[in-house]
Image (cartoon, rainbow, N blue to C red; front, side, top):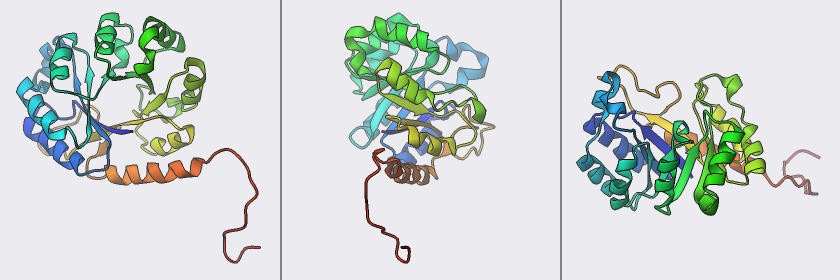
Length: 249
């Protein structure tokens, strides 16, 4: 699954958020996510204007449902019942909430797919979370990501390590400025790709996820390349085959 993460790149503007939805519904992404933070987050001066009201979520989730999957990256435990009433398809747990037992339990109680970002966590931290959720861990897919823009810290090999040590599907979430990292990740066969998207800034200074986001108007090109490159991974079996290149003997 290729997930377009609007996150909070909507800048708190309903009109701008609708621009994202319009473009992404025409794209080849499989799913779209918004990020809903805890109420204290929106009380901070920097983020006060980033709040979207419940009526807006009702409207846009209705628009998306049946066309793309809808996911919510949620930190506000009080909002889970509301989003359940809207029929969202899956939830994402931000890496900062990996140790938030009540939040994770409440989300698992929905019986929906749960994607857990592991950006600020160690293998030990992740094992503890999975142990607490042992009876329902089959709902959980992990996301390997690093909360840094530096390419030398992306550590794609962790996708393989996490699959082996944690016995769970592992997706990849990109925060690197070099977007070609997404293509490099293909060889490690992540279960899903979580990719931040951005629109044209116009009246806005800078998106919160500006540096590592892909334009909503070029996302299809990235998807095309990811799907084509996935075919090159192969089976790992070297078998006898006839030369298929004309002129070569």
